[in-house]
Image 1 (cartoon, rainbow, N blue to C red):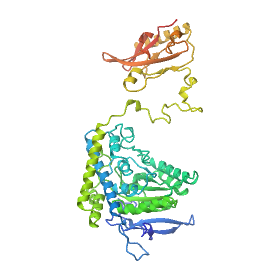
Image 2: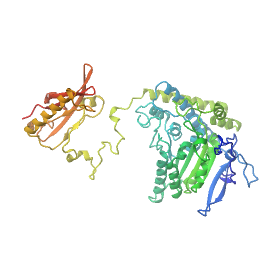
Image 3: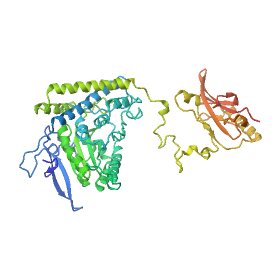
Image 4: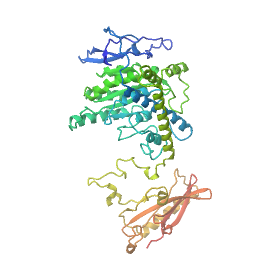
Length: 556
């Protein structure tokens, strides 16, 4: 039976109001056995066309109507498929448990959100994808990366902030990314990845229909994962509309773990049945038991198949539960202990293991061998991450701008900063010694074509700076920020060809912060290491920081 088989959708049972005068609400009804999904074509009076609406007895608590056949049970899987599912889910669980240990040992920093309890969703969908297919995740993205094929070493090293991580240590827990695996990133803000996923799906269709790139298996599919808290955000609705309008090859997967940090899903939305939002836009909406990987996989097969064949998007709501707090910094005191115990008893890994043994797909010994393999893999990943080097400081500004130098590329294909006119009349200030010590390239001299100032004007300026410094020293002028006057006059030394001294006007001034006693003092010197090129002409204080004015001592 298809995962989208027909049934009339009954109205959900209303439960008592939260308090007197409040509107009753319809919560999710969690049922241990969800037997298949069913559909009916509902006539839209506004559009005059059938809409596909999908429900299940997990939601309705009732058997299908209009069908005398018994509801379908788990999708049939082979021994090989079952073992792949079991190994992938176990990998995700053991990896996340190790993350918790490493976090509390101080090996990881910031917020770390674990996926324990939700493994059936990641495995059920991603193990059906091809390498060309794309996955867009959330801040709870470690297991999505592992399911997509990113090595455990690379994911663990990224969590450790090491250069060997999948993002070279710059992404961290919430920003996993791997171009070779088409993992398009974890996203720290809720809903942030949905437009990216929609764009990836549009790119797939554009390549297929406009650029005529052929793929014998059909369109490349994008799967977008996000939580229940995202489904009240505007970009969710906007992207559902665009995806259905253009029949994009995308599957929207709601990992509804019933809690958005500490906010219960039932209290945060007017209609907690998220799957209904799919038919509102003309696409199938499916609710499935997200604690059962075989049921998730059954729905995923059809949803991915629809997208790949060009039939358009599907919204799949997977009702699941996280076994830990929102993050490792969350004491998890808001959820009811009985609720947590109820879902813990439906652990998706234990459920699959029981299914494998009951159907003689593998023996207990074979499953223990897989468990040992995963334990060794995770131990290796930790050792690799711990022994890996941190990123060099020279990597700090990479991937910040569209081009490595951050100045833009001109019409001739060269960096605009390489054009002599780009920096006309300017000079750079940087600490070349400290940059080199930190592994960064020293600031290169930047050419400017301004002529040396006339001596009378220079003298007037120096007197003015001296007055300002004296006023600050006496406390008559209060500056909010520390002030540093640095003046560089290029000395004519053409015969040496030194760009720092030539009349053509090259100059780099370096400001260094040094400690004198209990004070931090700013000192200036030439980038060529000749502090004698400047003379002290004044100083002052602002909020405990001394500032100084300097002038060139090589004036002719």
